[in-house]
Length: 311
Ligand code: AMP
Image (cartoon, rainbow, N blue to C red):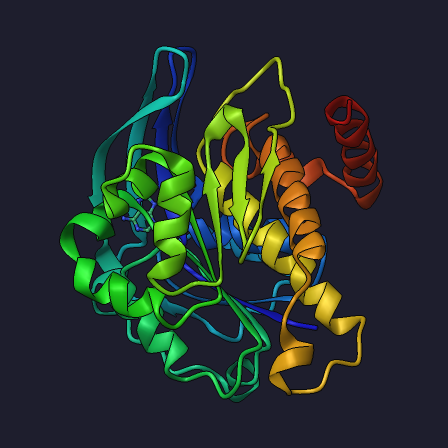
C-alpha cells in the first residue's frame, strides 16, 4: 500500500558541539521517505533545484521511493542550517532559504491522488492543504508541523488540524499552540482542535500518544552516542505512517467509517516503530545511518526496546 509523503527536500548545514557538516542531504521528506521505505512504498511529493546532487536521487531510487511527484527545476534547492548547543536538546536555526520551494504548487500525479495513507511532512500549511485538496479519499492523514508555522501561519494551520486524523509535533510546539504547560492537557486541547490522534514528541524523553479516552507513553530508545538529532522527528513520522500504510495494505478494509477507524493498540505499535527509526537516524549525520539499517536490525532494535521498556 503506497504512502504519499510531502515535505522539504533540503541541503542542510549542521553544527554540533563536536562536528560540522555542510550541504548534506536533509529535509523533512527525505528523512520521512527513507524511513518509511522500510515499511512500504513512499510516493514522494517535493521539489529540488538543478544543484541537487544526482547521487541523492539515485539513493532515493535505491530505497524504491517513487519519484514521479518530485520536480527538478532550474534554481537552488531548499537550504537550512542550524546548530545544536550543549546537550543537543536545544537547536538554533541559523538560516532557512526556501529557494525553489517558494512557489512550489504541485499538481499530484493521478496515482498519488488515490493515496490511502498520507504524511503531510513539515512544510508550510498552505502547501499541506493544497496537497490534501487533491486527494480523492484518504483513509488516514498524518501531519507534522513546527514552531515557524505556528508563528507565521496559524489560521491555515488551524484549518489543517480540522482535516487530519493525526498530528505530530514536539513538546514546545504543543505548548505554544495550546498555551497549556502540562502536556496531557495540551494533548487533550489539540484533539479538540481536530485530529483524533495526537503524538507529542519529547526528544530523549520519548513520546505521548493521545487517543479518544486514553493515552500511551512511549519511552525513547536509550542511546549513548547521538551524533546529529536533525530529522529524528521526520524519521519517526515516516516510520509511523509507513507502518500504518503497511497495516492498511495487509487488510481488506472497505471504505466505511467504522472499519476505517484504526485500533489504538496498532497506532501505539506504529509509535514504537517511529521511535526505533528515530533512534537510528540520530546515530549519524544526515540520513547516513538509515543507509545501513536493514529489516533485521530494525527487528532486533524493536525487540531490545521492548525488553528494555517493559517492567
Ligand atoms: P527536525 O529535526 O525533525 O525538525 O527536521 C529537520 C529537517 O527539517 C532539516 O533537514 C531541515 O532541512 C528541515 N527544515 C528545517 N526548517 C524547515 C522549514 N521551515 N520547512 C521545511 N523543512 C524545514
